[in-house]
Length: 279
Image: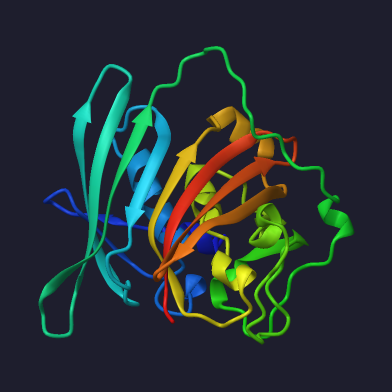
């Protein structure tokens, strides 16, 4: 039985010095380098699979300090501190340049924790939207490879059909909003690693706000994991609803926030990104 493309991309080889060797996967190629979500998933998988990992992921922040090149990379991962119920991680990804120098391409931190039963509530009700089975699948003539790994069903806020520079003049709460159902095309069940990847599935909000093909890329992304293993198991391989909205666009940068709900309406993760765009 062949390994799922997602799991194949997460394969790492432990080294004697405690680092891990990996390589980018053509199955998850983006316009430049790999899909950022697969990089996030690789880090999460390395942490949850670590022999000293305490609990499960609660927070993850990645800083994409340079474009990750196709090919080999080294993941440096260490525990900064372990408390009674929380654990803090620091990580870095390095690649060897053509001249033989070693360059840092990503930095970040993560926190895991042993969750305890407490009072719980949330102020993020899932929007009332059409069922995924009633919606057509998203297609694009210029689809990047990673996009083909998902079954996406747009609800609202799709990519512009005409790139004519038109500025979206909808009310502020709708102007950069996108909602869509998404699931793994090959039926892989959701886990913490794939949830991290799903949190990066949104196209840059500036393309929704203004129909101009502007080069853009994530500089920093934070994911907060609200689901536990049982809730992820309940979500299984079904559709989840993903929603994102931009906030402030100014001087070459903008931020966007997002949420991912299970089909049952459970908030699984929230995310926040800072994105660079070029004029």
